[in-house]
Structures are given as structure tokens and as C-alpha cells.
Image (cartoon, rainbow over all chains, first blue to last red):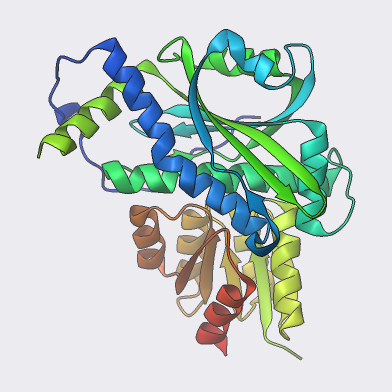
Length: 222
Length: 120
């Protein structure tokens, strides 16, 4: 379903005025990884706060650059059905954020957050997963926004159930992905009701990655 | 009868969470809205003492809804409750007439403190 764009008018840096710099592909990949480090703490802290952090053991988030072809293996293989909550972020900079979680972890998440065994695929269960995807993504964006002084406007999240490979295929068909690599933030929590493991993927398009590289380099040189 | 609140959020889970927090603290939730347009319509119909407002929602976003509600009733009391804590959005919401801006995820006390401050 197409969503109406947020009509918020915000003051932004004119990204077209950020100077061009000769930057290697290897350096761009480093920056992509740094995009993960910046937001990983925020995103996982948000999830642990949601889960009432006194009762949760949070593992340190692992940030990695994964080749596209390896992503389905992270979720137990290309043919395994998983739940994907994906959010398109638009502004001058655009990318997708995708939260992939298996059914077992999703059920633990729903039960932990509501105190009830709502089935994950019924209205309340889906609603919990959408809100978690929304909060994790927004927390990541809040950190990135603070660092580079840009405003990111996400669309409302969408929930899909499909094979991990198919979910990624859908996202990649809609975006001009920057590289053959995707940024993966692996999160893991142990709650009173079980273990929750999820993979949070950041997929910037080529233009977005170029701009962020230039802004980070310029900021670092000032 | 407690002070009346209209809850706006596109997810049923968050509406349920906010409703539980408010009702446990003596407030009466008179309506729920799943997007900005429904919030505007329900505000005009119910005239609650306070509205909680999400930002990122389908059909009509929260900033637009705040502007429309304030335009219809400049005395309306609106508290934003959104995961989008980016500075420019907070400023935009407060400039549009919101009384406070709570960033999700939140603790129950943060909600109650904000609501008490605005409507007692």
C-alpha cells in the first residue's frame, strides 16, 4: 500500500554543497560500517528499554558488512520463512532499514512485551512487531541525525512473512543498493521467556552512501 | 470522572500500552485514533482534555494533525509520543503547538509526568 509522504518541512543542510572528495571504495565500506557502529548502541538500547532492561541480558551488538548472498544464511537459509519489518527512509538521503526475525524469537518478543501469548500473526502480535521495528529504526536514525545534522523521515513500517532471500530481493529491487554488501547489526537478548535474536539491516543507495562519506570526512577535517 | 484523553498511534500495541498507563493513573481514555486524520476527526467530535500524538503514521502524519487540531482549537493540549527524536522534528512539533515531546521507548512515569504537567 503506498503511503503518503510526511509533509514536515525541516531545515536541512544542502547536501549538494558538500564538497566532492577522492575516496576509495574501501574507505566507503569503512564508512558504511561506521554507520552501523553509530546507531547500533542506540537501536539495541531502545529494544532493551522496551523489554524492561532490569530483566534482560543484552549482548553487545555485532556490526558486520555481509555480502548480499550471505544474508539468507544468517536467518537459517534462503528457504526458511522469517518475519521482516521494513521501513523506507526518504529525504535527501534514502535507504531501507529491515529488521529480520525468526518466528520463535518473534513470539518471545510479543510475549515479553505484552505479558500475553498473542499469536505473532494476529493483529496484536503483528502490531508489537511493527512497533518494535519502528522504534529500533527510529533510534538508529536519531543517532545518525545527531551526528550529521540531517533529518530522516521514515515511512510507516511494513510487515512481511517470506523467505529471507525473497524479502531482501523485494527491497533490493526497489533501491539502487550502494554496494554488494549490506550492513548488519546482529542483536541478541535473553529475557525471562526466552532468547530473542534479530538482524537489523541497513541498505543505503549509492547516492546516500556517497553523501554520508563526504559529510563524515568533511566533519572530521574541520 | 478522570480527565479525558484521546490516544493517537498507528499500532494497536502502542495504543494499548498508553491506555493501560493512563487508566491506571486515573485518566479516562475516550477514544483511539490510528492516524492523523482520524485524530483530527475524533478531536472535533470528542473534545478531549488532552491528545497523545504519534508522528510517523499512514494517511496523515502527526505534525500535520497537530496543526489542524490547533487551527480548529488553539487551546488544544497535545503531547507527542514518537520514536522520532530528531531535533528538527521536535522543534517542528513544539512550534506547531504541542506541549511536550516524549521519545519512545518510554517509561510509564515519563508519560504521567508529562500529562500531569499539561492537564493536572
